[in-house]
Amino acid sequence: MDLQAVKQYLQGLQQQIVDGLSSFDGKSFERDEWVRPQGGGGISCLIEDGHFFERGGVLFSHVQGDRLPPSASASRPEIAGRRWEAMGVSLVLHPRNPYCPTVHLNVRFFCAMEEGAEPVWWFGGGMDLTPYYGFTEDAVHFHQTCADAVSPFGEQYYPQLKKQCDQYFYLKHRQEPRGIGGLFFDDFNLLGFDASFAFTRSVGDAFLKAYLPIIAKRKEMPFGEKEREFQLYRRGRYVEFNLVFDRGTLFGLQSGGRTESILLSMPPLVSWKYDWQPEEGTEEAKLYTDFLIEKDWLGRGS
Image 1: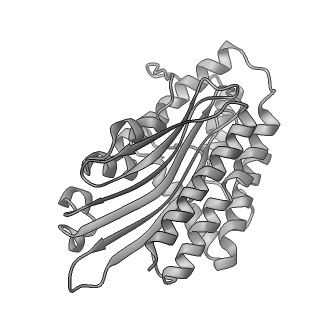
Image 2 (image 1 turned 60 degrees about the vertical axis):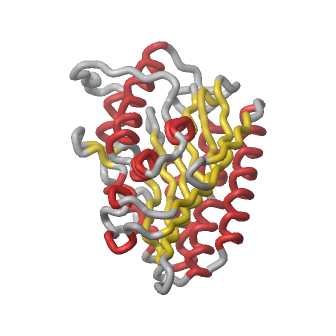
Image 3 (image 1 turned 90 degrees about the horizontal axis):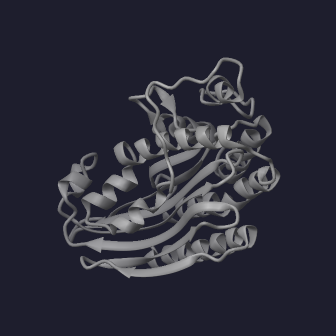
């Protein structure tokens, strides 16, 4: 188990993605290095008021602690109280143009250690797309890139991880998906360390290929106040999920993480409307009927 190799990959991935996004936007990301008093630290790369991105964050963190609190290990009580390390890259990008989707990526590694016992470790992560106006070809491209990233490790992984993504990024109180999904995996160690690490790298390395072609195609589409209002309304769902259900947000806050970095995923402008419903037959209604549904985008079956 080579923790240093994982850390080097994650730092390189952060820089690769920041470089690609900066080139696309034309504005550089701000870089904020920080130290966690309880142990560890990280680098937060932020863009606000860019030429294309209204807000975005690409974060690297490597944090550790002497005792994992029970609240952060509820699903794995055997690791409560162990010394632990967690590292990862996480990003959320909020374009200004409503025809360009919000996107999320996370790749991470966790290890809990105790003297005289085998370490408990796993990889996790994935990526998912949250459109405001749906385009079938964009959804197919995103999911095909996700499938291409994991299929070399076994044809079973894409349908499994797609299903897990659909289940995870679901707002139970709204009874609707957050977006059109992608991949989601956690507690991933069945392939052994080297192959599990390679699997995680393949997902991280696929991100720019999955996202940049979509926003390049949509960035010049004209929009007005109606589209912008719908985007801000739908962003509210993003906030609700992150604050109520997102494991990374909850773990970060429970383990004494850096609040500014944890909440960097939030969009800068959001709106909520009481009991709002889209008009039948509109593009806004089409998002609900044609995209925010469980769908086999690649026609592969389950």
